[in-house]
Length: 590
Image 1 (tube, one colour):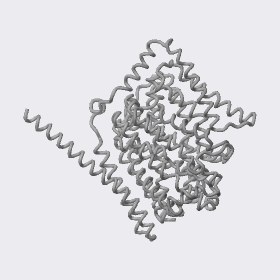
Image 2 (tube, helix red, strand yellow):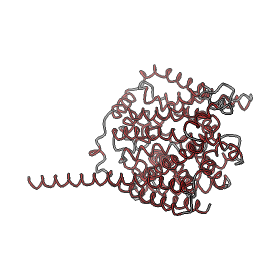
Image 3 (cartoon, helix red, strand yellow):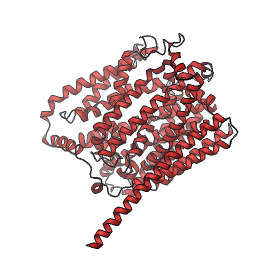
Image 4 (tube, one colour):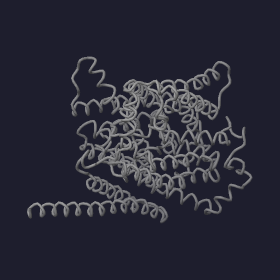
C-alpha cells in the first residue's frame, strides 16, 4: 500500500506544478476566468468532459449501475444530446456573446437585476453541488484506503482549494487535459480487466438473463421495483429531459466562453461528444461485473451505501500494484477539475459582477487587473472553505444515497433556477421581469413537495417533483409571452442587440489578438510526456506480467498523446515562422 501513497502523492504534486506553470498566464480577471478566450477545441472539449465527470461517475453513478444495470446510461445519452446541440449551434452562440461570465450574458439578455440575483443566488447554491462532488470523492477514497470520511473531506478539500486558488482557467484547462488522459487510460484498463474476469463480452451480457439479475438489469424497471419508482419509464423520461435541458441552457455558457471563436466552440463540443460516448461505453462495465462477481466484497465495505464503492472495490481487486494509486489520483484530479472550474467561474462572477456595483455605491474606485486577480483568489479560498464545511454536514446526514442526493438537489433547486435561463435562449418575446416569474413558478411545486413531505408525511418522488416543476415553469413562460409587446423600447432594443451579437461571428485576430495555440500544445505535450514517464517507472515494481502490461498501456497511451501534441505544435510553429518570413520578405521587397 505504501507505493499507492507514493503514486498518489507524486500525482498531486504534479498537478500543483502544472497548475503553477499555467498560472503565470493569469494577468487579470479575463485570464483567470476564461483564459483570455484563447482555448483551443481539443483543450476546451477535454475540459468539458472531465469537468462533468468527477468522482461522482465512479461512486454515485456506479451505485446505480451496480443496482440497476444499464439504466443509468440515460444520463450519458442525455449528455451526448447536449454536446450535439452544442456542436450544432449552442457553442457558437455562447462564444459569440463575447461574455466573460454567465452573469454577463444574463445582464445583456435581461438587465442588471437578473444579473445580480443570479450572482448572489449562485454564490450560495453552487457550494452545495460542489459539496456533493467532494463527498463522492471522499467515499471513493475512503473505500479504497479505509480513511474516515470526514478526515478525507477536509484533506481533499484543502488540496482542491489550494489548487483552485493558485490556478485559473489556464491551469484548469491544462490539468483537465492531462488528467483526462489518465482517466481514460486507466478506465479502459479496468473495463478490459473486468470483462476478462467475467469471461468476455458474451459472458458479460449472459449475466443479464441470469435469474439472479434479470429483473434488476432490465433497461426499464417496473413501478415499485425500486424505491420511489426509480428507473421506471416515468423516471427515465423526466431524468433524461432534466439532464438535457441543463446542458442546452445558458448555464452551459461558461464552458464555451474560453474558446477562441464560435467555430472552435462547436468543434470542442463535438470532441466532448466523442469522448463522452467512449466513456459511456467503459464506465458502467466494472460496477456491473462487481455485482456479478464481488457483491460480498462490496457489501463488506461497511458504508451506508455500499454500492457506491463498487467501482473502488473491483479496481482494488483487479488493478496491479502501483496502478491503483494512478486510479485514485485520477479520481482526485477529476473532482478537482470539476470543483476548480466551478469555483473559478463563481469567483469570477463575484469579482466581475458582484463587487463592482457595490464599490460604486460605496464611492470606491474600480479595481485594476492586478487587484481583480488578487480578490478573485481570496474569493476562491472562501468558497473552498464553505464547500468543505457543507460537505462535512452532508456526510453526517447518512440517509441519502449519493445518486439520490444529486438528483434531489437538482430537482428541488436546480430546475427552477435554470428554467428561465433555458427559455432566455429560445423565447425572444418574453418581458424583462419574466425571469423572476418563471423562477417563482418553478419554486411553487418545489416548495410544496417539501411541505407535503415534512408536514403531511407524503414524500414526492424525484420524477414527480421534476415533472410538476417543468410543467409549472413552462406554463409561466407561455403566460409571460403576451406581455412582451408592453415592454419599453429600451428593453426590446436590448433583446435585439443580444441576439444580433450572439449570431455575429467572432473575428479572433481583431478581437483577441495573438494565438497561443503552439504554447498550449507544447506545454500540455511536455506535461503528458512527464506524466507518462512517471507512470512507466511503476513497471520496475514487483508485479505479475499482466500488471506490467497495464502500466505499460497507461504510460504509453499518455506519452503517445503527448508526442502527437508536440508534433502538431512543431508543425504549427514552423508554419508560423514561414508565414512571418514571407511577410518580412514581401515587406523588404516593397
